[in-house]
Length: 281
Ligand code: PAF
Image (cartoon, rainbow, N blue to C red; front, side, top):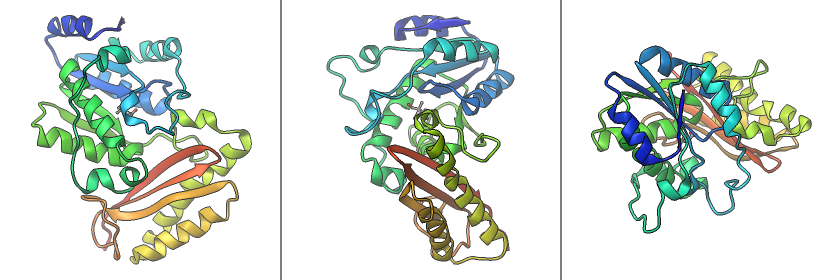
């Protein structure tokens, strides 16, 4: 496996690759969710590339950029086990040199609702870094987790609007045996908070159950989820949403493919999770 730290070295290496390239962009501190993407990238392509870059432009001023967990040696060892061929781990000064001035700002509901409403500027940072990484890596396929469902929609829009020459592959959320969605931020949780964090997946299972039993009133589903979460003393709701999958507009009636999503603070740690609801008659 090669570990490349500069954009110019990566571009040189890229010129020597002739087959298909599968790309897994990450911010490191990898867990089984990332590794499932790496495994799939390796299985589907001639060459598998993963990037590790904690992207400063997608963090708000009061967010956890400086304390975001980092462990490059551990990440590299995990990726090596999955057969990843190249790890690209650039410095921020290379990605955003003095005078950097070009950002990608996707207009409209996909970037302003839900995460976009709570984290202004977040998707501008994500779209910008992902576009830069796509330009550098030139992947045939790029792999993202359903856990960040809104990010997936934003990246699909980016690729479609800018005529990207790659396929975006979306892989299911990987969960701990007790249901907690895997996230690099789970390391922030104390044992008591870790227990309280189960309220996210429990609320999603409740939404699925209500929907399965025939409930189509979206506000009834949101209200039931909110009640369940509010019963957990350590949890503070940022949002609970039952929205149209295409534009993330809140639904009155679940009569089309919907995304149930939520963001909840457990102490100082902000966790997100989601589940799609297929149309059942
Ligand atoms: O999902 C992430 O880890 C990040 O948002 C991404 C896609 C690597 C961009 O920094």
